[in-house]
Length: 203
Image: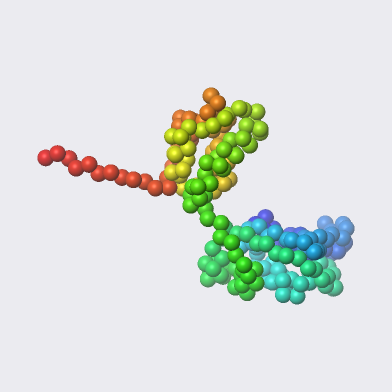
């Protein structure tokens, strides 16, 4: 949803008829009609333009879509999964997201905690990204040292899995041996927690 402009979104989501706008050279089924009887996954739903949020709300209420350029509605039956890294309640307060749409799509919610709060998954995720990077880069890095892994666990990871994947990929690319060592890690600007120890001076 984050890549859909208010001009493009109605056509992508609900379809259009040939000739309904300049580049509409043929009829096109929208995402909802294509997924009839299945599931529509709306990623980054919090980034939908306001006008499109209103059209989406109409679709969810009536279970119908109206392609661009059409005067006829099409009945659709789909399951909706929506994801966002936005705080939608705050977006509602700021007037960026419709409250009625929020309540419509929030029948059942699953909160996925950020990477820094899922350290029990860290070893497995890091190992997976090492294997993935080996395949993509033609390398043969087998492991990561305990010191290097601990340093990774101390970071904030504001970019979550994408950031971890990129860091591991870089480490695999530049690793000289078959193990990622502490010296192979990039210089991090922020850490998950910073411990400061003050040692009093002797009189």
